[in-house]
Length: 460
Ligand code: TRP
Image 1 (spheres, rainbow, N blue to C red):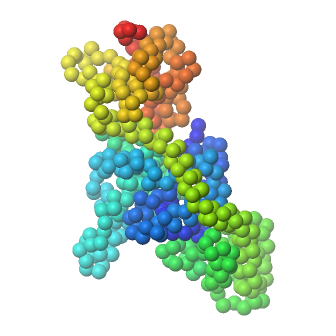
Image 2: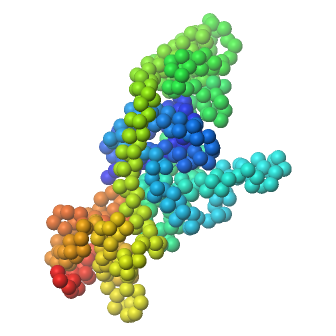
């Protein structure tokens, strides 16, 4: 089974070495694994919260996308897209907003920090704070829940957001009586180095201590490395590798034996100037070939945009049907479809209720059916059919197959598929984990058995 791993990159900056070592390199490595289904996207709606500078957001999107591609991301293998190409994300944001506790958003770290800063300066608590900043965690939850991601690789500062996404997803599932969303987990890579910056603190745009990855070419890389702060020991004096950013950054790029040799050279008194030259050459050996690809991509922004558009098509193939199902559950589907699919709740004693099939026409004009449990809970949603006859024929076939014990229920990823003659004709919504999926199998089986005992639909 594949694990769906999803992460977003806010498009307000230019990738630096810390981004590369801490996020891009491990994410690209993970995306090559057969058991990983990776989703990476440009979080440009999130960028709007931080910046109103349109040129900067455009440029940052291109630079970040080009950097990931140049660093080896294979867009055929992963789903690589930009957030603002997926209209289902803001739509889902609203659905989630309506089940999100305002009190939870009051406790979000970024919002609280902004309120605290206002308190310190004696301002009104919410002075200068946009509703966008306040809603940030809900937009992020929509990014994640729209695709049923299992794992979200993030830095420690983002853990609270993932917990909120879980919380919101769980609340939605609970309120609507169905496991619409997989509940995501934060993935914190313990072994991945946080790179020190020029001043020895964590490399971060907000400390203005970064070393650029590609921007400015090899020259800018070298110049930044020369600005790394060191102690004042002279050439010939032994250096302490473990307290030096030069050594720590070197180690993030070098093999074990290269690292051991560099450590020894510093202990033996290598001068800082020479040490920085060694560091530059080591990094550039990795970065130079990627930089060439980066520059070629940056010279052809249309090609980058085309890659992202392709990715958006792949992403929407998942998000569009998901949102259609959510709209239906929320009472937002077209009225003709609602009449066809409404479970027969009124009338009849509960003991009279049976599992049932209900046909409807969905928003994109296809004909589908659902299987409801005796209690009216949706169990399965069919694939789309071009005409109502085809949908009806499969329902009839399903009853016959169920009676003959030939309707196959097959767990796949976190979903249960219903197969007739080896073809998937319907599927459950995603369960939160494999054990709840497997726990649902017997009741699905029972519903199919009960269905088999019913009359075939008229005309079948
Ligand atoms: N908030 C994340 C950050 O600043 C970026 C982001 C937006 C994200 N949406 C996401 C990360 C969804 C993971 C999943 O780093």
